[in-house]
Length: 178
Image (cartoon, rainbow, N blue to C red):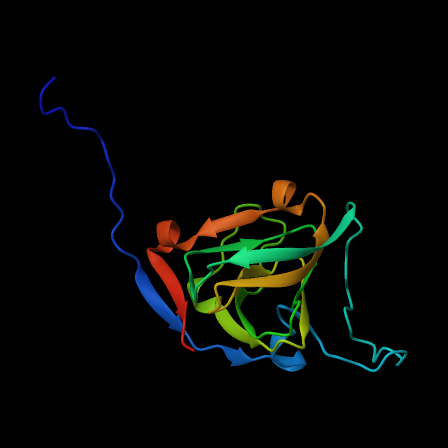
């Protein structure tokens, strides 16, 4: 048939929301997880380092995650409802992360509110632990490639990877103001 039409839905270009990254402190990151600061070898833990680390629902996986060409913006955000996750730059480089609080942990269809999404600049010498259910996008960085230490469960990306495509759900994407 000549000139047949197909049913194609086109998405409008997303509205870009700018996020000014906050400086990471234990206090302002507490809603999303924990900032793990350097401490001398053998020093007693101050009582809050990686508090609440939960890898009890499977086999832990600690690995070096190589990321390429991430840029400084995101169109989707993810959470892991069954596990905490720890991230740190392997070479001490600064990086960026978008996060939203872990609301609706028992609801597999929950979505973060756009106004709840904030950004942090993570200094290279600091690791983070994300609470179970914290929405996160990243790591992001301006370099062509970076490596990160990642601690999660071996099957997290197969069985506990809940993603919301912000562009499709809200017509919105985010860009870091750096």
